[in-house]
Image 1 (cartoon, rainbow, N blue to C red):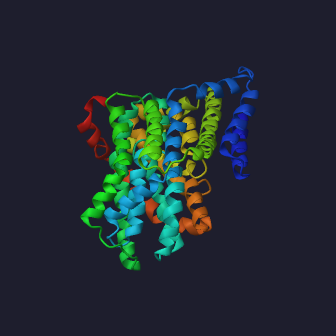
Image 2: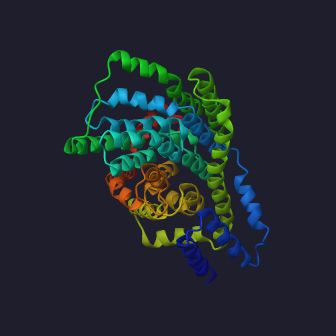
Image 3: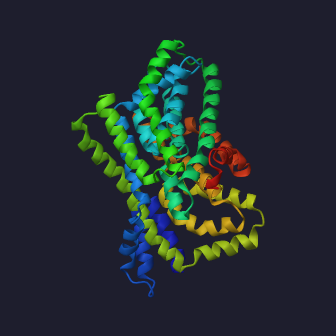
Length: 429
């Protein structure tokens, strides 16, 4: 009965609009207070222990790197390069929007930073070029989801910490799915652009292209150094995040000279604000995990699937449907903290590789970034475009379909995602 009441309380608090981190903390506290065998001090202790992880230091550091890029106008350099590459194709600015999200993803690991940094520049420009606001907002929000699929990725770091799988292996597995999502979106943009008569840019000359490319080489080297360093064991994900932040400071101050010392207080405040939201939710979810362990939810889940499901493909479909639902009102980090420990033993029982479970989970939860009521990337893009969220949702739906198609391909044909990692470093698997 207590369990049912706690679930009901969780749902009610969510519908009241209370932030998910506080909802999780409240339910964990009230639940543990009603368990005589667990002392009350367990809640703060578990919250503190949940953050006592070297891997989790990567979260604020990657967010810091993304904020430094945006403040140092490195995002604009990437946009200029993207336009030089795809601007001449029908719907060129929309193509550039998607391509720059793919480039930005290789540095930041945070979809929200992509939406904010790229959206502030491209949404107004797309509107000036004749794109309707819905299209500008929809493409910006949807392409931002690539930020958590192409490495480095903060959710991948969290998943690796929860399951003890290789961060480098997860990073490599995300490359092909992320590229496929981006290319699929660009195909859709081309089809719609031809139908709507969206404008193109004049094809960049080789001289102009080389100028833009050379100017962005320092920024483009960031993901190469990060991912290469992690998969070769030169440094850990956390050390890579620290390097990314330091490297971005150096090129912003001394190469591009667009980053100013006076910008640092605001950058740090923004970083701490965004990091604290994710990390507090993670800490609260760790406390709730203790309560879930008391009620033996993992054992219950194993028994349920063992008695009712006899196919790993059906299990994967159920997991995708479940996380699509959860992602509509919960961020990826607390969702994984709460549910991955429950479903991981079941997945292993079905002989599903934990790394495959990781990429499927992360891609599914990425959809939640553009689906209300949570839909943080959609909310940010809609705010930049001054568009009601309900109108934005209609524009983003075709792009969500692209993500889902690639997700199903990855889930049911794992060799698509695992091909590149096994070629580059088979020892990771």
